[in-house]
Image (tube, rainbow, N blue to C red):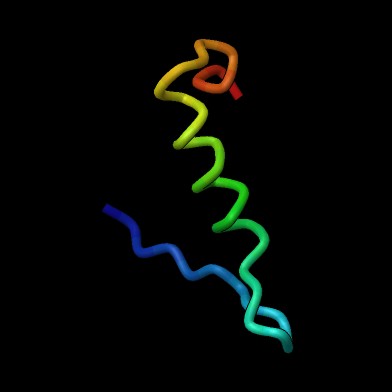
Length: 36
């Protein structure tokens, strides 16, 4: 497997990681979310 590093802004936010986490949560219930 590959090691993935997510960037972090000055406020400590990781927008890409947060987006992927939200998609993972949605994919449990939504087939459309699994396709993205």
